Image 1 (spheres, helix red, strand yellow):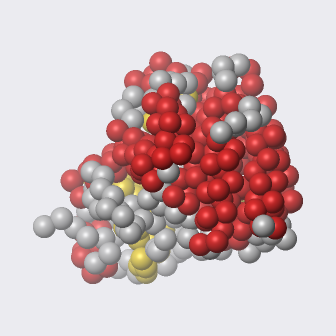
Image 2 (cartoon, one colour):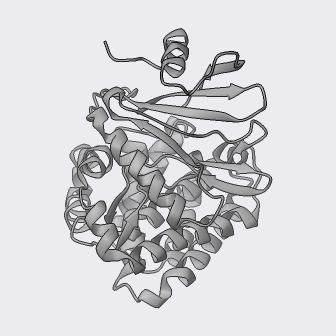
Image 3 (cartoon, helix red, strand yellow):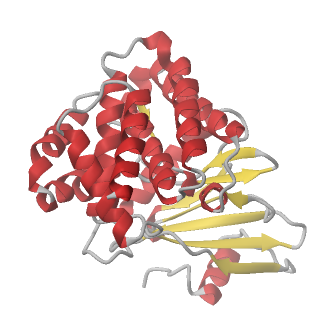
Length: 342
């Protein structure tokens, strides 16, 4: 029987048998909540160091049926090992070990006094430096992986998990649910796979970012692949703009912070001169903004009224999408506020 790491007694026995816990060690274990695609458990030793273990699920924990092979843990482990090399020092936890047979991997645990960036944003704490760090982090990953494109492309050529965990549940499912913009979404899904420019994280969001002593640390790497960097940028902008929609008092600050993120990111990758990067980023942002209210993984903090408002605003913008990120931010905020007044 496959190990279930949420069975904490079984997990402790496993770690002892594998030599990760020595005789006489005192450890504490707790299940970490919030993820939909993995079981996640933290193990902490008496001296304060710890491990976080992730085990991929075959059926994701969402309302709609959503399946993916748990063998994707191999992609996540490989992704973390490479990001330990490509990302700025200290921005990813150290890789520790992988057990493909049990579909799990382990990484260094971040100390308990870290905070989740998504939670901070939703509480109204908008810190410009965090957005600058996020833009620099993404730009560095894209730039360094593009500089080593032949090798990185060979290692991360398989985009299967990106397709069945992002393109299908976000773009293609949303296209079926929103026929008026099905052409926009279906075309974007197809063209995304034709752009092979850099390593793509595929889940680049505040939810997957911890802040420890003022520094951002990036988590979750299960859909890493070599592909279109515009997806990552659009995915991140989606979260900033959706929170700007939800948090009326912080709306202007979040809109400005989203623009700052893009400026820092774009400066980092500008030397590559990637053709149509900004217009593609706009289109991915629009697609993700719609997918997060009409796809298989809707944003839980948006109210039903906000979801309907965001859907209406984005569908309208898709009829004539802007080509620049700054214009998209302004137009999206304008549509949200116009719909709120109706």
